[in-house]
Image 1 (spheres, helix red, strand yellow):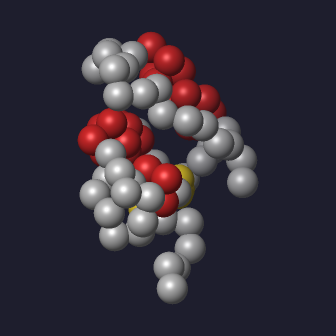
Image 2: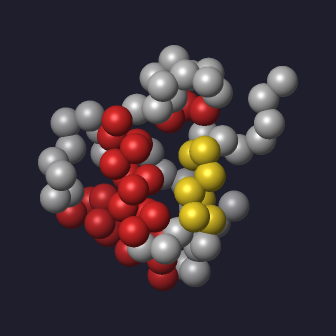
Length: 76
């Protein structure tokens, strides 16, 4: 693991400079793939709906060429 961060919260603005800084940092580390943990689900289960803020963050990462993998390991 190279990095870990929390989202900027439900009330973060769409042009959040803090998020941009985090994405730039991940890119500078040469990260090619990023896993989203189950905690990014509204119900904290692998099949629960994804938090809308996390969905936006994932889209920004994907725009930068970083593969986003939803989940860290198979659920049982």
